Length: 500
Image 1: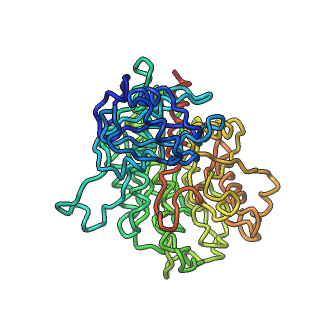
Image 2: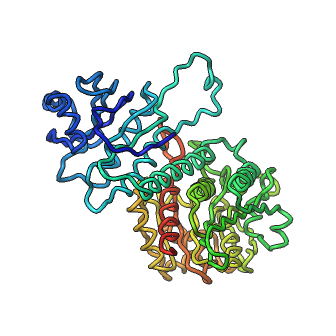
Image 3: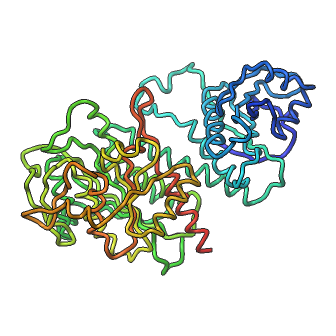
């Protein structure tokens, strides 16, 4: 998708589709008012008929509106003016993105970014628009046999002009670049998540990382089983025992900052298919366990976004990846394994495997003397029960880091919600036979999982994002969401900005 920023009168621009915003009472923002003037009030009279619903994101498509040079005009409701905020703005952009993706028009002019929004400047609005509009064009049809069928009519606008009424400048161009780069990273994360487990194996993730490193010129190292054995990653390798697919430990180094600057380390859970192991999951919806590597996918997607933006920051990406399968060699409930840190773990449930691979990766992260570490994992069903599918769960051993992540989540629209990480919960991980059990019982499953991980993060600032509820959606719209690439990208953009 190609973005351009322009100034001018939207009524005078020749385009396949012109996108305007209108408030629930029919009031038109400045650029929409210019179109209304060009139509001698016809646009306002059409809106007064009530065909456009009041709810933000409702749409009305008009053909060959007199006074304009657009083949079609899409009017998007902005909701009530006194309630217009971040959500209404994003809802309007999301509706426009959906219409653009389905339209026969190959180019479009969008005026929504010029609508004033309390406490949000134009660069923020442009970044959001570029991301949401580009993301709205995402399709996953790589495995469909008719995707390239001759004669199939192509749909979707590919050239988008974002119209503004202010002077243009480098800051605006950078904002659009950021938004587009984040959408590109989200697309990679979605592609990886949507691929089936027989294609997206640990080896495939490793090859994807190596291809990214080659394309964007950052270093990638892939550790094999023998390397992990030498490092003493007994916890990680215990999960891999039942699978015929070889495990991989992917290490990525993006060096955009000063040579001696401490890196931010991102750790992504990469279970490419999770059967539950010997603690076998129910059959219903088990196909969705191909999404258990969405933490890894989000790290890869964020690296792509960061590299495209050329952020002046150092970032390390760690991805422990394996399948979790039953089999004659698989780890059994009651087995005791030794982690890279030397701490022993009683595996009480083999379906609590994500924490077993993450804990060794978190120990490995110590060698980078990180500024902070964020792990991202589809870790617990309990998080979905607690928070639903709107925010990701957040737990941290540093309140300032947690506050920073929460703020970037609100800013990006990819929100998180903090849960407590109190010492009292650590008692639930007691084991009679090892230093700890890998589960903490029936209650507070998201918290006890994070408590487990916290035992391996005592030497640095650390935050944990549980994305079990936000990494994908089920039902008719089944598919990966690309979250939390926007949150992680926003976090890194802000960190890079603060270093300047």
